[in-house]
Image (cartoon, rainbow, N blue to C red):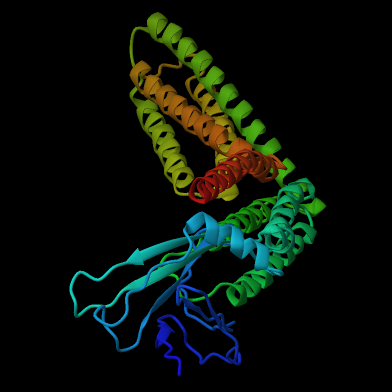
Length: 399
């Protein structure tokens, strides 16, 4: 009768399905050797932070079920190098995993009530070629397509639809990744960061395309609008010319009145109400013009300046006819009128400068082109930095 020790494997989750061997060997020293093949299903905690370039280690711990060191002492028959060589000889297929080595550790009991445990640690590397070809490279190709989409014209909707299609393709690959990765990891895998990061970059590119198309659409497309803008520009130029004419005419009139004043030596009291009327009319014109906005404001100022010029000209003729060559005008009042005209000229000049670029056709298109160019440089730089940092992290953790 032969006694067999009650050895078991701690990590085993299912009962051994292989039938025990009926053979054994006994040498001249009384040593009994029994060899049995086992088909095991064991648990192993996965560390997938570096997936698909990860290395996994699984333990097989042999110990007795009920006997302590008083009854059974366990000693490994082979060291780590011998166990590694023997495992490579008997291993026929490796499938997804590549066997690296096997280490043997003997945990001897420290007292008589404990048990000896022998631990075999199997180190394996995942074969990553298929994951690179089927997952990592396709996402890089989609990212390259997104970069190439900057060559598509922004005037139509083809660029926007193309970017949305590429973004949906990356979403499909994310669903495939969710099925591949196990859910036992505590940290986010680098491949998930890779996928989410590229998705975020492409989303940023899509938002930039929407902004550029919005800016382009702000430019007028029909001929009627362009014609109105051209007429508005002509009116602005004409108003500016009228202001200069008014200003020059007032200077001439002022100097003429000054000469008459010096020759006459006295002031006509009948002309004071007329001068006040001139000031009141100019103030009313300035008040009306200052409360207009946009193109309407520009047209009213243009017409107001023309009306003021004609009114001042008619008043001068009225002065000459009324006095019969004895025109005397208050020099200070005319200087105030001249100052008010200078203020009107400055206001119109500033307003024309601020709105000149906006009135020009194609202004927003040029702004969109500058935005697109600056974003492309920023986008390429950000993509390169993201890929370099991620692949370096993959490589460092792999080593």
